[in-house]
Image (cartoon, rainbow, N blue to C red; front, side, top):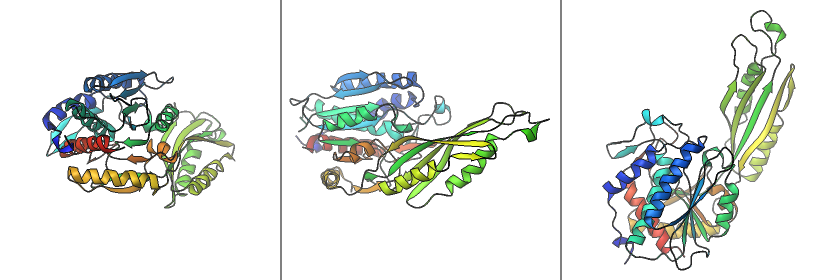
Length: 377
């Protein structure tokens, strides 16, 4: 039997994908993620895998490790690394409900990246149903914290990757039929301004506003952006009472850097902002950093060449490019382990209320992943 002998039922797939999307699982809700892990565990077990639920660190949901039957199980093989967390809070389904419209399927997290994981699982399910054997053992590792930089499971992912020959990440496909081999660094920073409180009505001049200080710093930070190193302020928290001059303001900054040198310069520039102005202190601390996964590494290109040949069998031309968006591929690629990223579903609107995938990419990508599992050696 060969890859073309595998049969996929798109309507059945769509029906079984729906609970994955309607089980909302934002990063900051461990209970919601535990429900999602339970659902994924059931489907992995039903596909034939032995499963292990790995408890989460405090404040985080659990992870799932699924190992598919193979005579060489325990030897280095293929790792499929994915994340079950999304950026969408519970309740987003009310604004972007599961629905099918004009060849598209909508729902929170369907493109990033539940749909891609589900398609890869369907590939393994059909392989085992047909009694076929992959050349290498296959392991799925599904984690709960990618959307915030993977602070809780990076060591788990890296250790699992070290025990395998290659890594596949079914993050959303890039434009057309593209995948990713190479990602730029992503650095996060936490900012705090500490001002002097006062009554905003009768003693305004006695206060020093932490909010005003942060507001002045934001344009300064974002103005440091270049083509090779970007800075964006995405989160601000401050104030409790409008009649109080704010004494504290918190912000979070995301920086993208194309090279290690760009990363170090960006880190230095951010840390140099710390200091005191007009009685207000600015504190800058470095958060989670994803390392540069250098594009064009020979081991990744070799893996891509194999994947491109499989894509041809499936019926599409696979392309590749580096990406400015971070993923857990940053970690595995930076370790030098052959890695291919963004093998997941085609669609648009990730991280928005129009997130959707193209229906025809479900079978396409399930068959593509089946080919990867069958032919990688």
